[in-house]
Length: 585
Image (tube, rainbow, N blue to C red; front, side):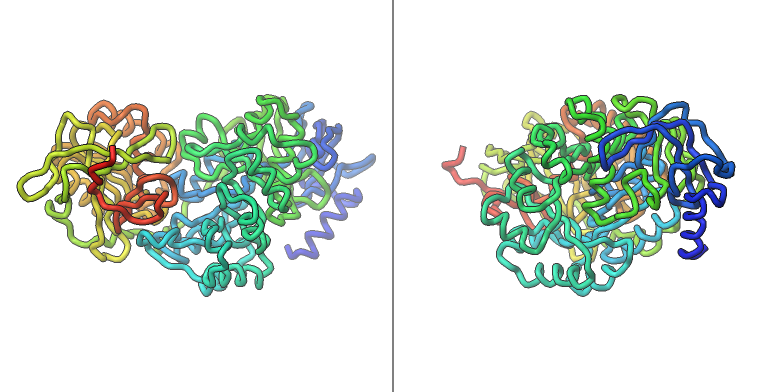
């Protein structure tokens, strides 16, 4: 049916000339415009809401008695990396749709760092025929920095090649804040490509304030999900930005920022999850979890629902959703209690897609063409992991439990006659290596790390933000080589080895980041592996052994991180040697 015919049917249903395809009767309708609730019925024609019905209207083709339940617009996730769920888009939908999420705005910079525009093309195709509207922002920073080697380099011409797609809404989180502030030509070329297409820009500027923030906002960057304080939130709203209240698996700022949300600035706030693992979604929820947290912290449920729905739509210029109103998409959920906020029925485009937490849609994942087998690693040997040091006194990455920020650990180590590091089982020091896996360059760097506490063996993963090279940690070269070679063989994932034996593995054949297995299976496997890592390998129980490792290669987070090119000091914003000065303590 073309758009004209859709409208004819929609208008005829609203006027009572034709029967509705679906009628939700006896419900309490949440009005996000007026932040009110009114009783009534809702008529659906095709995939849209026709109206609220009238006396003498034809009997609907299908009627559902809501029994006085609240009818709430479908929830909108303002910023998410689907890859962080380790699930392909089809299986990601299986996780979040029962939570009431009907629209997400995804930034595929993880898979694009591995596969370039092939990654975006795959994500578009894989999310095309599922009961979840997935829109994308074109990744603005691939690679994320010049201090590591990703699988692709995406410049303005790449932006222009895909920005015209109606499901690509704009330019993704512009992490290169200095590039904007100092008017870097390459950054502005991407901004211009976005402007030419009439699309908008998402921001990412943690801690940027004052005149720097003025300069950053000049290209009309519309949002930020990295505010750490209410002061920063207020400064960004004052400059016209939307601020996202984030509740991810690792990074959370929702409760911190909630005290800064007022009736005056409420309309400039929306919810997002950013990075959220299957366990978090299964046990806590998705955007519905953000709503519950906000309500529990004292926010009026109607305000929390407005933030979770209409605000996300307006921020991303999706004017056909986010409310229960004539002409809007028939994306809505039924809940018995606003404060408890547990979706019992979820409708997408007027079709029931989840009931009581059960996903009803049946479909198969598409074949991941052009994004599998992305493990082009130069040959490795035991010597590849030989760590030669020029001094007994070294600096190591110091893991700080509970986050992704690290410190610097200065200590003395043992070396052999050739200067090679000798592992001391009584010292909490391990070798960590990052190996370039995209172009078979042979680039690789190793250093020492403190706080992981593994006793014997090696752990490896191809999830290594943001370039997603192969990262391995261990106390001996044999196991580090074995886990590396195994991950190359299976096409990427997460694996553990002890005494040359593979203890367990979660294969992630889609770009080394995702699988077509269900989120439940991914969670089950990771839970088992987490227990093995702690009980068999002796990894620090205060850590998530795999998530912690995946962030050790992210040089844009303080303080010490490792890339395939060296040990990087964020505060100096340069590479530093492993050898420490004698006067450092």
